[in-house]
Image (tube, rainbow, N blue to C red; front, side):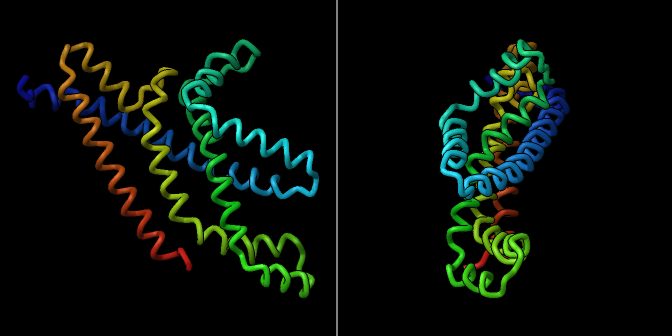
Amino acid sequence: MQWDWNYTWDILPDLLRGLRTTVVATLLGYVIALLLGMVWTLLRRSPSRVFNGVVRWVTEFVRSTPLIPQLFFVYYVLPSWGLTIGPLTAGVITLGIHYSTYTAEVYRAGISDIPRGQWEACTALNLPRSRVWLDVVLPQAIRRVIPTLGNYLIAMFKDSPQLLVIQVTEMLLAAYKAGTESYRMLEPITLVGVLFIVVSVISSILVRRLERRYATN
């Protein structure tokens, strides 16, 4: 099968719209993952063993469950309980919750790397708990884990095609629709692969620059 350039230019706008949806879903889901991951981390530091255990069990369950069943649950099961969510919103929420369990572990590792002496110094200075976390602990912990957090952004982007199972017209679904209409899969699937590589490489370069600028040893 030869490459058809006319067909390529015809389907490119649809694929770019799919790419836009993919990027939007990834970025919004990533924001949720960063914020909710921090919430999980702080809750895990609760002095209550029962509460700590519940939070740990929930995060382990979400992290150990494949993304696709979670997407089906949010989009197809929740409506039977009276909670109907649009496909893109359901995809963003599910991506965010799923990856928040990974970012929580990243944050936890970064916080654990803070030298014990700094905690003791904050106690000796009688600093308020809010200042200890906002001014001392979190700035250092986040700088330490920027490379890993960036890698999860790229991983989330590569997992975003799974949103097609709930009818989100992201890049892969756009390519599939174009291919089924024309009975040509070579051009749309190849273009999807190229676009994924381009965006992933650009993201990797940006993550490395952030790492060099902010990460500390």
